[in-house]
Image 1 (cartoon, rainbow, N blue to C red):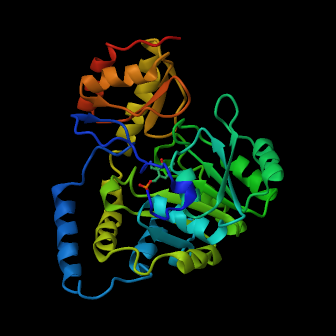
Image 2: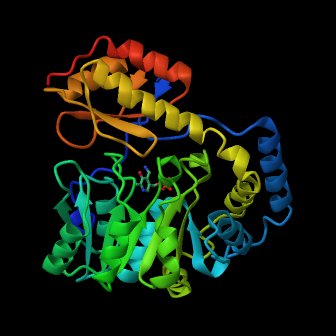
Amino acid sequence: ADLPLRPELVGDEPYGAPQLDVPVCLNVNENPYPPSDAIRREMADAILAASGRIDRYPDREASALRAALAGYLGHGLTSANVWAANGSNEVMTHILGAFGGPGRRCLTFTPTYSMYPEYARNTHTDYVTVPRRADYTLDAGLVLDAVAAHDPTVVLITTPNNPTGTSTPVAVIEEVLAGTDAIVVVDEAYQEFSRTPDDTALSLLANHGNLVVSRTMSKAFALAGGRVGYLAAASAIVDACRIVRLPYHLSAQTQAIAEVALAHAEEMLAKVDLLRGVRDDLAVRLPALGFDVVPSDANFVLFGRFADRHAAWRTLLDQGVLVRETGPAGYLRVSAGTPQEMAAFYAALEGVRADG
Ligand code: PMP
C-alpha cells in the first residue's frame, strides 16, 4: 500500500484472457496445429547452433529475421522496411513509444482489441475511441471526422478487426491516408485468414510514409509461443522503433525459431485454408441453431445474443470448452479449432440457447 505506484495503475489487475487447463481452448484465436516433427527438429537444431554463442548478445538488429519477413511479405519490401519484436504487442508499444507519449493521442474504433488501452497506458499516451458503425464496419468519413475531432498522432485501424472479424477495405485506408498526416497503423494480425487476403494495406506502403502495417506470426503462422510480431513501414518509421526498443529485445532463440518457421512458410501456413473453412462453417451452422453471427474475415466468430453471456460461457466451460467472453454485450467469441475441437464445441452448445 505504501509503494509509490503510478496513480493510474492503482487498482489495476494484470490483464489477459483466463489461461485455464481445459480440454478445448477456443478463446485466444490460436492456430491449433503445431509444426511437423521435421520442422520442430530443425527449430531445435537452430537453437542448438545459437546456443554455441549464447554467451554473446544476439543480433540487436535481427537482420536475418527482418530480411526473411520482408521476403515473406513481398510488395518490394526490404529489411529496412521491416521491424520485429516479441509479438505485435511489443511492436505496438514501440510505435506508441515513438509516436505517442505524454500529451499525445492514439485514436481507435470500438469494439476492438482489448490490449490497445494497455499499450497506451504504458506509454503515457491518451487513448481515445470512437464507435464503429452498427455493423462494425468503418468508412473514411467516420475515421476522418474522428481524426478532426481528436487530433491524434496515431490512428489505429484493425482489419480484420478483433473481436468482430470485420474487414476494412484497402480503398477505405487509402482515403483515410489522403486525409491525415498522423501515423496510420493498420493491424492486420489476422490478414492471412481473410476472404480477400490480397486486399492488404501493404500495397499502399510505397506511396505513404505515415503508414504502418502490423502483422504477427502468432495466428496464421501457428507460432504464438515463439512471440514474434512485426511491422512494415517506411524505413524512417523502422528507425524510430529502433530508438525506443530495449537493447537486444529479441532473444537468439526467438530469432532462430522464427527464421526456421519462415524458411518453411508454406508448411507453417498450410492449415489456414482449413481454418477458414471452419470459420465459414460457423457462419452457417450457428445461425441455423438460432444464434446471431457477425460476418468474419478472421479465424474466429462472434456469436450471440445472450441475455446472460457469462452463464452461457460457464455452461460451455463446464463441458470443457473455453471460449472468450469479450466484445459487444450479449456476445461470445469462438476461435476456429480442429474438427475434434469443433465437434466438442457444437456438442457443448446444445446446452446453450440464444435469447434473441
Ligand atoms: N492485434 C490483434 C488484433 C490481436 O488480436 C492480437 C492477439 N490476440 C495481437 C495484435 C497480438 O498478437 P501477438 O502479440 O501475439 O503478436
